[in-house]
Image (tube, rainbow, N blue to C red; front, side, top):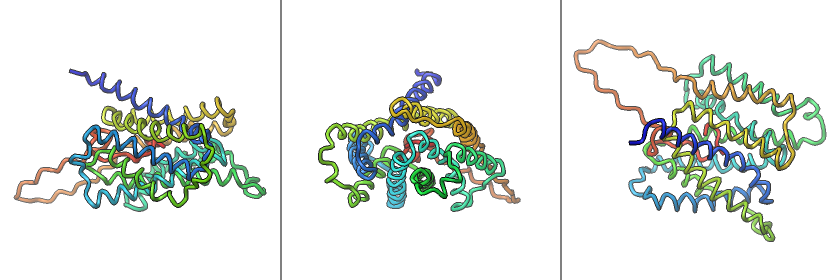
Length: 334
C-alpha cells in the first residue's frame, strides 16, 4: 500500500516538472518566430490533439459529466483563456518574458476582486490589504516611470497593460471554471483549447507561416509539451497535494521564466524591480492560503430533525472528477 508521503512526493515532483515547463513557455513562443495570434492558434490545435488523444486513451469520454450548462461555462472559460494567451504573448514582445510573467502573476488578486464584484464573495480587510501590497510590488516590478506616460514610445507601457489584461481574463476564466463540478479537468481543458480553433481562425495569418522551418518544432512543442504533457502533470499533481503546497510550488513558474529569460536572451529585472517580486509572492500566498470565511449560522427552534448537510463539491486539488483549474499554469499557470 502506497503511503501518503510517497503519494505527496510524487505529486510534488509532477507539479514541479509542470511549473518548470511553464517557465520555458516564453522561450518557445519567441523562438517560433510567429505572431501571437498564430502562436496561440497552433498551440490550441496541437494541444487539442494531445489532450484529446490522452482523454481517449484513458476512457475519459465515457461518463464525461457535461451538461449543456457545464459545457457552456467551459466554452466561456475557453474564450477568456485563449485571448489571455494572445495578450500575454504580445506582452512578451513589448516588455520581456521576465517582466510580463511577474506582472501576469497578479492573477490571484483579480480572482478575489472579481469574486467580490460579480458574485458578492466576501472581501476581508486582510485580503484587501494584501492586494494593496501586491500592487505596490507590481508598480516596482513594472519599472514604469512618469516619463513613460509622456514620451513618444509607449510600447513598454502597452506591454505592461497587455500582461495585466491577460491576468484579468485569467481571473474571469478561473471564476467561470470554478463553477463546473463533476467533470474531469482534462475534458474542461480540452473544450477550452477546442474553442480556440474556430475563435482564432479569422486572426491566423497562414501566409506568414511560409518558410517557418524550425519554428514549427517550437509550435508543436507548445501544443504537445506545454498544453498536453504539462496539463496532465498538473492535474495529476493536484489530486495528490494540499492547497498550500500547490500555492508555493506555483512560484516555480515565474522563477524559471526569469532565469530562462536571462540565460537565453540576457534580459533581467533591475534592483528596484526585484524589490517588488517578494511583495507579490508574499501577498499571493497570503491571499491564496487565507482560510475561507464561514458565515455565522442562525439556528431556529424546530421540532423536526435537521437534514444532513450535503457534502461540498470536491475541487481539482483533491479529485480528478471535480472542477478544474483553468487551462493555464497553478494559481497562475499559463
